[in-house]
Image 1 (cartoon, one colour):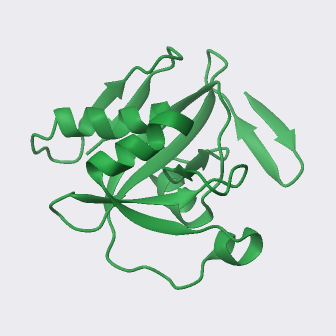
Image 2 (cartoon, one colour):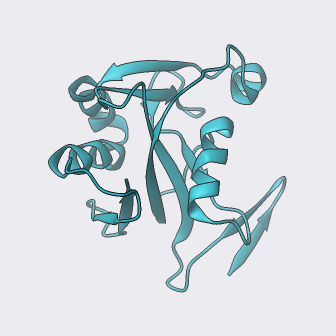
Image 3 (cartoon, helix red, strand yellow):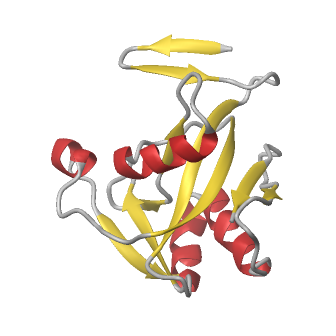
Length: 156
């Protein structure tokens, strides 16, 4: 199912959940620092980069695209969360230029603390990853079930 809104098309799964993708962007392979971006609705608060999937888009492609666009999210959604190691950061990017978004590296525990008040589901992404930090081949999604009962998947 799709809904059309000005400048975007929202896609939904068979159960009516908005399809989203997000990335936990780590500074290095040790995964000890994660990149958060300022919220477009609450510029003094931090979020995990992510947003809605476009029609015919694969979750991993949407996650990478959303890292660049850094869009906000709605409350009734199903999110595919991927882990990404950042190899380059741009001084300016689309949302920094257009709407003044900021980005900052956080130690994992600090990121969980910062996210807990404003975006507890995002804090759950990091908690789940931290609890399951066994190596994988990048093909095994883990399900995160936050308080809103919508499954979220963490892809390593």
